[in-house]
Amino acid sequence: MTPRMSMVCRLCFSIGIASMLVHGASVGQSALAQIPEAAGEQATSEAAEPLTLTLEDAVTMALQRNWDIQLADLALAEAEAAIGEAKAPDRFQLSLESSYSRLGPQTVAMPSDHAHKYGVALYKSLYSSGRNQTILTLARLNVDVKGLETVVARRQIALDAATAFYNVARAIGFFEVAGEKLTSAREHWRLASARYEAGAVPRFDVMRAEVEVANAEQQLIVAQAAVEIAKGVLKRLLAIEVTQPLQLVTTPHPSPIVVDPNLCIAMANQRREEIVVLDTSSTGFARDYAWNLTLSLSKSLSDGGASRSKEQQALWRAEQARALLGKVADDIELQVWHAYLNLEETRHRLSLAAKTVELAQEALRIAEVRYDAGLATPVEVTDARVALAAARTNQVDAIYGYQIAEAKLLSAINASEDDLELLAPRSETQ
Image (cartoon, rainbow, N blue to C red; front, side, top):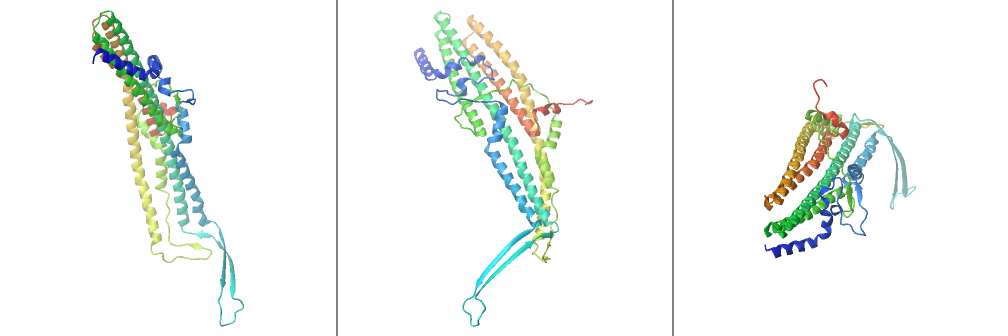
């Protein structure tokens, strides 16, 4: 690329995104808890006020507004309404009967050619040999299952909201890193231009610095788009308009913790609702015999084996529930184990990332000093700058990756942050 073409391309590119990059050039020192305006929304005079959210706000709003939870709650309400129907056979049932008939022409004289008939029927099941109780047990079990689905849906939505919140914060962190890289590249371009004007470096140094600035500008645009995409996912979970501006208030950097996987699994086995409900399912069936006693003293002599078949179905359902209980317990143990491993991985990454950033910052400082003294090439400075950007990106990824991993572990255990101290490894004296 010729010097003229390089300069023209850079100027055209810069003019197209100048309004966006005014703020992007100064984000290098901003804290991750702040939302840059350029990454937040494309503000205009007519734009709505941004919705400020903390993590707790996002989770609460998702639990109140998410459509999946509303559907689960409605299914639970339907199951609860069915209990009344299951109780009906054991209650008094009253009915009114009426009929009317009219006769056509008769060869024999009749007192009347039409007739009315009225009747009242009162029904009460006195004993069903467990049939009615089984129906009621199944209805209540269905309520337990729907309640479990509601609880599981709420726990999953809470986790999804926390994950989406941290993903937005991570995307904003990446945007800030891109802004820092652009600021650094522009400073290097300024320094290279000044040294070129002084005749200390060739024109190649300025051209390379221009290319580095252009690349950094493109990376900033990509990072901004990623922020908006991440916000879109969060907005969907919160059931708000996708055009609603958002501003996040993030927590300070996490303090990594060490947990005992055995304690995590034990607590999950005690707290996960799936195990409790399935344990009830495996023991909640009664036998259903083939006869029925009511006020009319009726007794079914033969139903073609239907009652026997229903009894066998109930018994097999109980066996299925017991088998499913074992499977779910194993699945929960594996889920907790994977969450624990993910937490350990991100904990080590977080510790290593901080050290890497320090080394990369020092390496860039040395490279810039060497270049200013005429001892280093622009390639050396560019490589050092790329290494620092990669280290900062890895640090941001580790920070929010750890917070997501911690949220997933607590969700798998069905625990809260207040329970973390209960999961710490214990000494033999404890």
